[in-house]
Image (cartoon, rainbow, N blue to C red; front, side, top):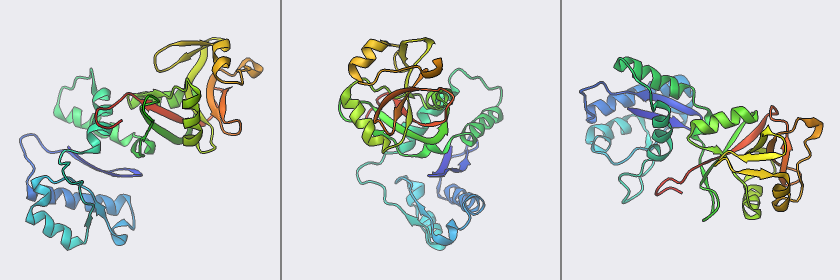
Amino acid sequence: MMQYRDAKGVILLDILPQGQCINAARYCSTLDRLKEAIRRKRPGLLRRGVVLQHDNATPHSANLTQQWLQRYGWEILPHPAHNPDLAPSDFHLFGPLKRHLGGMAFETEDDLISELRDWFDNLDVDFFRAWKYGSEGHFTCLLEFTSLSSYQNATIACNALGGFLASVRTAEELAMVQVLANKTSMWLGLDDIEEEGVFIWQEDGEKLTVAEYNAVFPVAPNNFNDDQNCIEFREYTLGLNDWYCDYHLKALCEIPPLPGVC
């Protein structure tokens, strides 16, 4: 499977038929399909110029491939030296995909391919934005969801990536979120939906009472109108606040450590 994307999402998903292998001729055929997909999905990009990043695999560096790239004037973003296996897809794309497919059974190869295409087609644009990394001992990998959504939908989107809405348990972590949030409100992974006044972290299910909450964060939740059960980082107080769960905000998603990444 070869997948080509930009910051806006997937441009081409090219699945190699069973029994075939990738050589220079097959790769050039994929580039032909990619060029056509760019023409359809990213109008004007071919005219402005394509910058392609691929690794140093033999089909990519073969003379036939280089001739194709020169013919159409595509620029190649150099692959990092001494990192032949450095592929963002390995730690960001294939992990969530494997988790999505886990436990599924398919009667035919076509059924599997159909599920793959559906999964890629339904990815939110935020999936392809860069993860931000916390400092040592604080957070792991963080991704800001810029699309506005309810607490529940933000949770579902983050779970689909194998993560949870971020935990902010210390003053140091709050200070980091203040920088990352850049004066915008966003959902965090804490709520008292199950029992009023007893907050639960999404990360591990640990409970936090109002008294414990107030010991770390100076402004205690007030449950205004008896209907504020989800915790947000609030832009104008730069602190945590309980808010209406169906309100649409940005969100901060956190995933567990990934070896060699964060």
